[in-house]
Length: 282
Image 1 (cartoon, one colour):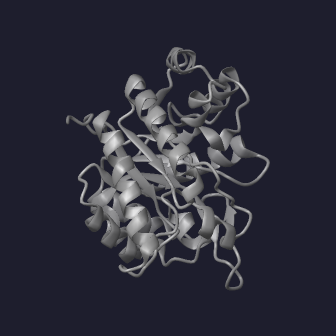
Image 2 (cartoon, rainbow, N blue to C red):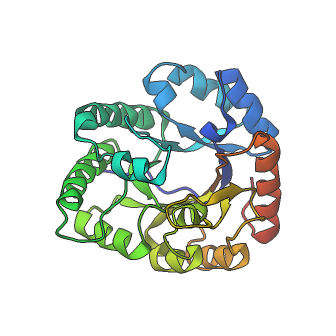
C-alpha cells in the first residue's frame, strides 16, 4: 500500500467556503481570493453536480492546484450542539451503509485527481474508553481509513468535537499510520474543547493539515461560540503560528470561512493576516 508523498506547505482556501454553484464560479472565486490552492469538497463530484474531469481541468487551466479533499457524511444536523453530538460524522447507524458507499466513491475520486489527503468530521468521540459508541466509531473509522489508504490517500480528522487528549487516545487505538488530524483552532473554541495552542502542542506530530479559521468563545454552556474573521477572535495566532513553523513546517494551511456574507473579502483578509504572521505563501 503506497501513499502519495506529502507536499510542501501551501496556503489555500476551502471550496465550500466560497459557496460556488458552478465550476466557473468556483474558479472565479478561488482566483479572487488570491490563492493558487484549494481544498475541494468531494460531495459535488460524487453526486455529479460538478463533473470531476471538468472541475480538475478548469482549476488547472486557471493555475489552481487541488491540495486536498473534504468528505462529508449523510444525516449530519448542525442546528444545535446537541443535534450535532447525536448525528455528527459516522455515528448514525441508519446512514452507515450509505456513508461507507460515499467514502468509497470519494476515495476513488481523490485517487483519480491525485489528491493525497482527505479530511472530515469523525463525530463526537466519547471520552470514556468503555463507551459502546467509542468502540463503534473506532471500528467504523478504521474501515474508512483503510478504504482511503487502499487508494493511496491519507485521512485527517477535524478537531474540535473532543479534547486533544481524547483524540490522541483515539488515534492510538485506531492504529493506522495514514490517519491524522486536520487541525482547526476555531473549532476548539466553538465547541469549548480547550485552548487551541495547548491542543496543537499535543497533536502537532499527527497534524496533516490546518484550517485557518477564528472564533470567539461561547457565552454560556450549551451554546456555540461565534466564528469571526481571522485575526479578530480568540485564537492566539502568534503562538499558534510559532508552533506550526517550528514543529510542522511542511503542512498546508487552508482558509475556511463558514459564516458571514462577504466570504471572498473575509478570506482575502485571512490570507493577508496569515502571510504577515508566517512565511507560508498563497
